[in-house]
Amino acid sequence: MQRYGLIGAGHRAQMYTDAIGGAHRDVATLVAIADSNPGRAAYHRDRMVTEYGYAPDAIALYGPADLEAMIADQRLGRVVITSPDYTHAEMIVRALRAGVDVVVEKPLTINAASAQAIVAAVEETGHQVVVTFNYRYSPRNSALKELISSGVIGTPLSMTFEWVLDTAHGADYFRRWHRDKANSGGLLIHKASHHFDLINWWLADVPRRVFASGGVKFYGAEAAASRGLPPRPPRGTHEGEHGPFELDLRDDPRLAALYLDNEHYDGYLRDQDVFAPGVTTEDNLAVIVEYQGGPTLSYALNAHSPWEGYRVAVNGTLGRAELEVIERARISVDADGKVIVDPSAMADAVGARDKGERLTVQRHFEAAYEVPIPEGTGGHGGGDALLLSDVFNGPGPDPLGRPSDYVDGLRAIAVGICGNESLATGKAVTPDELGIPLTR
Image 1: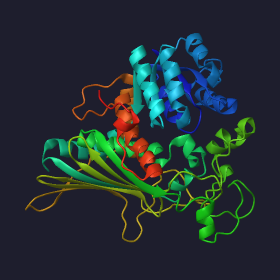
Image 2 (image 1 turned 90 degrees about the horizontal axis):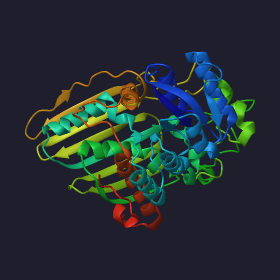
Image 3 (image 1 turned 180 degrees about the vertical axis):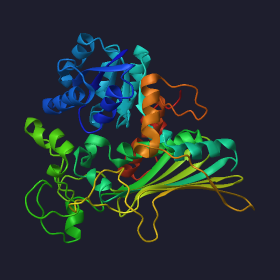
Image 4 (image 1 turned 90 degrees about the vertical axis):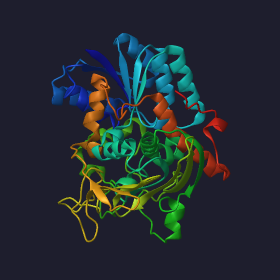
């Protein structure tokens, strides 16, 4: 039985606490939680008691400063890190040097210096770092990987990838700590590391050079002023009428219990106005990536779309593969007329846009045909359950190579880190120039 500690007690932590308390309770037990907010740590501890039958004193609570003491006192074998992105590197390095393996939510970290620190700690300690890229496990993404690997479209020469976040899910990044790029590296790292990992994995290649363009064009105070938006409350939790970009925490019992009831500890507001000052995270991004093996990538990210999903096209020497995924065809509202923020909520098809997914192949001089995609269940297109099984039980043989380590994490964030440097300088940037090691 592996003894686990959790570092970071926000929204994302529940995926791991539910896995430990539920499907993987035979191999894992949670014995400690560390967070800067004692109320949020207590929330997750109390859920383990009420939902999974843990004894009230089975989980000890700590602050981040006491990480080493937590690892020693509780005889931990592994920690799961779900704290804000800018804290990942420090927590990883300290945990490794304290003698435990690490499971960390993407992104691995947010800049070149902290990436180098993680590499040094891994080499120094020999301990393992697993980065949880759940989108690899989604059946539709695995299907595209299998198709490319089969050689049916030949050698990949180029790829286009467009990801659109809608005005519920996309806007939510601008209510939270993610809105300040210093906390997250911006969406080019926090969100797009998912995407760049998929691309690296699909192509079985390593990024060589990156050029990026983009900016804060829709959210934030300047964009609001340019469109003549009227004054708004500083947060979504308030009396009276609400606009479609507001989140009232009182409408979601879990968010209220996790954040609203505990903001008096640290002043953190989970429901900030997306059009207020302080937004430095770009909401429109375009990236060109050259790969060591020769392929090129054209990538686009938009965080204020009316629908949510992605489109991928891979051009090979023998033909083309196209994957279209509509995760949400339109913004949904609940019975009370409130916008549903949960990105897994699927609205009914409206007009010309159908929800769903489609993988199409067309070889040169042949008719196009559709490739069946196995049905997935659960979060992230069916990927979460498969990922968590590998995390807690250990990965078995996998011809698709879905389990990921810290080198995969480095390769994913390398595109975003170089992209951020390119945004700042207007020049193409390479991982080598920034000292980001990508060899395994």
